[in-house]
Image (tube, rainbow, N blue to C red; front, side, top):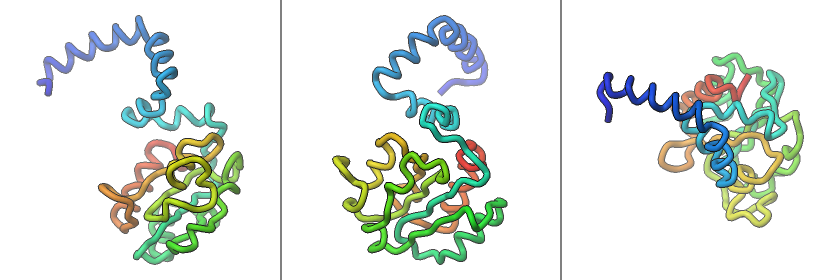
Length: 175
């Protein structure tokens, strides 16, 4: 860990290297398919909106899917606290119902802008060749951004849900 003087010195050196080698660095990250990972670390995921074909709109549907002990009304109330209209929210909070949920309706559909996922079965509609439904949503082209709920494991809690909604607004995943 740097002290403040070392951090300032490092910042200057880092800026100079980035300025000189940015194209090379981005090309390398692109070949390694790790640009998205870098942007997530930097909190700049919203820069990918033009690449993925999605743009954040204040009317885009937000899907909340996965088993929840927290009532739908409570989650909707949290979203209302952030100024999100209930018409924009689509819930599927029953574990069994997630197996048959039509995920493909979101693919290449600009009416959907974000998917918040909690606990759900690995197998189900839209899994395709992926190891799980969530992996398919995260890695197949054309799906809106996916945010996993929970800290160490998938779980929908009031506090984590509120925190993730705030982060999504801050990082411009929700307009």
